[in-house]
Length: 177
Length: 164
Image (tube, rainbow over all chains, first blue to last red; front, side):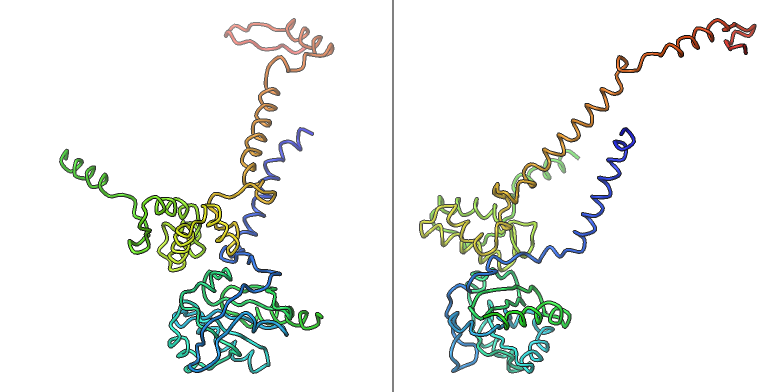
């Protein structure tokens, strides 16, 4: 018994090492979204493409889709862009939200790098992004058939993110009634 | 030397805390502005996570400061304005976290560790006190008496036990 008591600090130390080891690998910028399982808050945004219809929350749902937050000032969005173009070619529906940006600048991105979006709206004040709990660009929400948020991805979508997390989730959502 | 010290003291006294709040964000009513200021010191910036939005220069922090001022100017209570932000960014943004089932460890963890330490110290000190030391058994007493009987003082003054 006494020997066991002497071992307690060692045991606590081992537990602490475990906690630190897990925490080191955790990215503190990945905050849980408050919207998971909830419908996207109401919004109605002006278009990014001149003469196009805008983008409203009523456009979401019907099928599993992505809602991508981007901006012309966002460097990581440039890295992510080819991935979005690839997904569009593969038939994934992606809507865009041009966050805290001038619509002309947001449109310039689509002209120069290609346009992966079905609908895209300009959120110049950034208020719709704030309603979504966006902390930066790029961010991507997975929306289910009912128009509810099911997943939030922070940062550019990598091939691994798509293959391991987002595509399997979208396939599951497709099978949902 | 004295003069340098005086100048340093004067300069330090004059320079207030630098806040990130820009003059154009401030509310005209000093009472409301003071409330907004106090509230935004309690809200964590989600971009630079260890700063409050009051301290942060991030564009999003500025937007949130403006939102807090809008809500307060529109007649929201402090709690309502804070709820507006926590419903979007979660209670993570509260630098002063609420007491809830999932924050109990945060609130009482340090106390639990302190209690654990107190219990450990108590047990240790009690185990060390002399009255707790076990008395000699009958066999040990006999052994000791035997040893003392054979105890001799040698010519050089050192004590030692002679065998047998």
